[in-house]
Image (cartoon, rainbow, N blue to C red):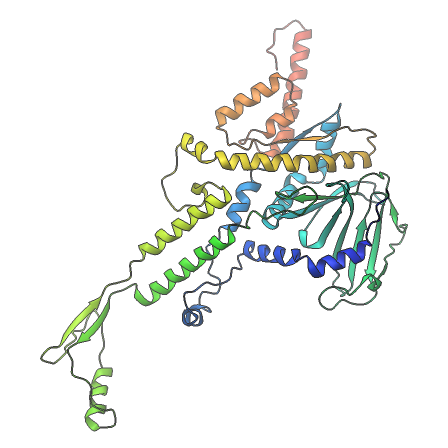
Length: 460
């Protein structure tokens, strides 16, 4: 049975109009950029304090995303023969040790991210291009869930025209709108025409014809579906946390200091009478201060005091919402809490058990995608059969330096390449790894020469 695919452009336009994904992506993006909606108890407080505190936000969204992204780091690849080493070289050549962080931040924060792998038509170099979620869509097979049929990427140029690329297994089709798109979404596929680049065929035919060169990183996604942001269940708690902080600021403004009140003073005469005007004039002359004594005349006159608002209750509430955010995201509370009581190593590990399990789950899901993208990149680079490429991840569980060194010795003992081992040691900077490898190689050469001359040398 032959499956008829929808028109890629029409399908993309229809999705942009109805799937609601970009609205979700933009909402998450606003939170991650610190643009949170203000939360106050009443409209009156909103009007009085909204402008003053317009940038007020006790942001937890970036901490949630960063806590996960910091542990999702590829440090190497394994594969048939030298394929793993070549995959790492291609990965590093594309600065993916840095760009991977961009991809993970996008996927964790918004739910989806994309990696486009392509060969430059003029230089012949293979490039890995991270792409934002709100610029891409992916179409999965209905008969074979998880198999990509095609992907699209769309963006608006500074000139006002819209570009759109369709990525298929055997080719890339490039389009541009016939007219400027002033706002919203194009009405139909008829708006677009072929976009031809000088010296480039249309469509661009691909050397590898069995893989769509757009790879979808869907966070916690179902097979053949879009991902889910790590912030999904945290945002209601984030809003509540911001409201608590807003209430704290209002309380500090209106009730952080004791309030004085005068009791037992006769009611003022009507304002229209001379006596009333004189009484109000004297009342307006009241001036409070550390250097003044306030005198109130009257048989039952006295000065009472309203106590200052207990601000500690707001701080305790903020701590409660930190704990709630920790529960719904599985990010350990000591990442979020304001307490100065740091957990012991054992307590920290116990607290991080669900968090580590979550990271390992994300590693398994990402591993297949990064492995497929790397295998495709190697094939574009001329490797005929790289086999299955599998990423080697940095440990999801934090290790002490002693444990890292012990692990490094064991890895070397079973033949793990030195470069992989060094990347797993947190105290070694990545920029120093090539220098260390060069020094080790030089030491081996010197040891070999010494051995050949009859001297005893230690094994390196």
